Length: 325
Ligand code: COA
Image (cartoon, rainbow, N blue to C red; front, top):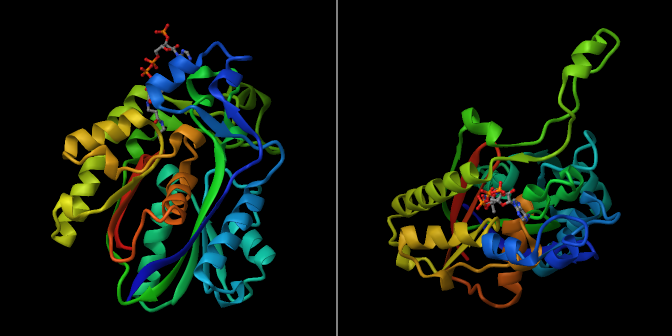
């Protein structure tokens, strides 16, 4: 059996911030941000939590799947920005939805997180362990930014996307996923320093301040432009399909120039790459499922069409899946 997406949903915070509004307190401009990235605005939480966005997206996905929360057997939330160390976001969502039967947990594969989670759901379903799952990508990245660092904070946004999958004859055709931990330092955000009764003050004072996103932009750009075409090629080879047989390429929404470079490298027209980064910025694990939900609700995706999903980001990680919609 294969995991088939039978419902999607998404959610974002109320506050919508344009590039021009960022320029009111940062040395930046709409012109700089939009020409280099394609991003024009993003949603920023002024109180909405990761869990709240997950639950809103999940309820919409369940409604569109015409499934009750009690039927769910598995909940996986992909995030780098959970509300708590524990309990994990999956359990929070499970409790709030009343999905009593579901096992629930959280994974972190940064901007590839939704793909790793979806692929995991496929593996469980293929193995016959579960017959359905709720897969969510959700982020409150705004709390992990240095809001004085114009080179990072303008790029990211907050949001959540969810998909309900069910075991069916048709659905995910194949997947691929990769990691390169040796290059992890090009995109990182440290956790708390070790701090306890036995750690001396000098050690603590020597540590860098925690919890801001650090990025070497051009390295990340090069990584994405190389690895995304590779993983797409891998999926096509596995499925023995030609790139032209794929109807839609739903890729992580980091930067319009990355999408253009991928389209050029593969010789696939940009019309096959739906985009919403103009409105959302980069929402990490949430970007693919939010875009998928929009494409689904707009009627872009038709049953039987072939769709490639792909994510790439910190870790470094990159992944893809080829689906029959
Ligand atoms: N507004 C105005 N100027 C800015 C700026 C901003 N928001 N951010 C950086 N700059 C400045 C820099 O300080 C630098 O100035 P300098 O030349 O005086 O030192 C100049 O713009 C060029 O910076 P640079 O980092 O070389 O720009 P770039 O052309 O590489 O573009 C990115 C930067 C981040 C847009 C680009 O590297 C990129 O998109 N990388 C991929 C990032 C990504 O997608 N990450 C997430 C992956 S999941």
